[in-house]
Amino acid sequence: MNDIVLANIDKSFGDKRVLTGVTHTFAAGGVHGVMGPSGCGKTTLLNILLGLLPPDAGTVAGVNPNALGAVFQEDRLCERASVGANIRMAAPAFREDGALRPLLAEMGLEAKTPVFELSGGMKRRVALLRALAAPSELIIMDEPFTGLDEGLKQTAAACIRRRQGGRTLIVVTHSKNDLSLLGGSLSLSLPGCFTTG
Amino acid sequence: MRGKKIPKKLILPLCALFWLLVWQFASMRIGEEILLVSPLAAGARFIELIAAPVFWLTAGFSLTRIMGGFLIALAVGGGLAALAYRFGAVTHLLSPLFSAVKSVPVASYTILCLIFLNTGSLALMIAFLMTLPIVYETLLEGLRQTDKRLLEMAKIFRISRLCRLRYIYAAQILPYLTSVIGVGVGIAWKSGVAAEVIGLPRGAIGTRLYEAKITLDMRSLFAWTVAVMLLCYLLEKLIRLLVKRAARVLERG
Image (cartoon, rainbow over all chains, first blue to last red; front, side, top):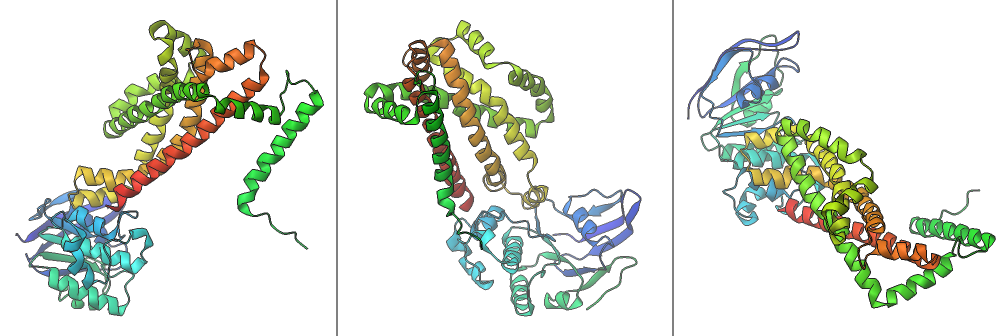
């Protein structure tokens, strides 16, 4: 597992310059916070790290595209498939729902339930578990606690800490409290952004 | 004061009854069964027909060919839609072909097919040709509407092709498949029976319709028409049900 090194990343959408000369190193195995207000390019930066967007200039080093996990801003679940199927498609090592049971129990979920029957908070927990269960070296989380109340945040954060397993975690959030729940600290504050929490 | 609402499940039967009464009234008004047979007479003839083994042989003959043609169109059209979705050049290549296929009348195809095929295979070929463009275009549109965010998720998590097909594309395509079954089964029957009326294969529904026409047996003409409508309706329901069940089994995993 390598450090992830961003060097002079630029990204624009038409006339709008979103990222300018972003240079940063995320140490391997750490929990790193990326913070800033809406529209300052946090999600764009995550998409560049995930390889979903090419930077206009600059380089990204240390990301193994075959060992990524992600919690996207939206849950991106297959709505008609069961909770178990949604996790197993990303983590085929869990061959059957039985193997997933201990993991699901940590978040209070049932393997057989179809996703469309779940509440928003439950779907978020499925998205979190999918990212944790999938084999990866780097997990990128965009606002991982969206839709979770304070109690569930604590539960989810504890589960993430237990299951991180030495992997690098990059978390975009608006809240320093969320970051500290994960045992991480502010790593990158994008230019012109301010932090809350 | 507003009157009581009619229960939902009674609305369709009541509407059907209304049109049967209109038909009965029109038939009584004309007073010539040879011009417009009454629904009662057509119904009585239909019951006579279904009691005879020849009805089931005839229905089976047309059913296997027409539905065979439609099911082959589903498979071929689905395969071509998948290819066109994956490779843009296939879309351009197929576009003029399907434009031509759509604009040629059933009668022209039927006559052309009669040169190359025996009459027994005619309905299968015509049902296939008439439904193929609809299946292809509808399923391609369904594939194009696939949620790009789910495909990105699948890419990040390195989800296998089989799982993508099963959980992302199958769910996406299901409403389009249901819609194409609704439209396609009807078109397959209409075009297939029309082809049989021209080609007159032995023991087909279209041939029975033709015989009823030349003998001015309007009761049989209407009874066979009712048989086609019923078969079309029942098969559409059956295929939709099977597709939904298959999709549910696939998706739940």
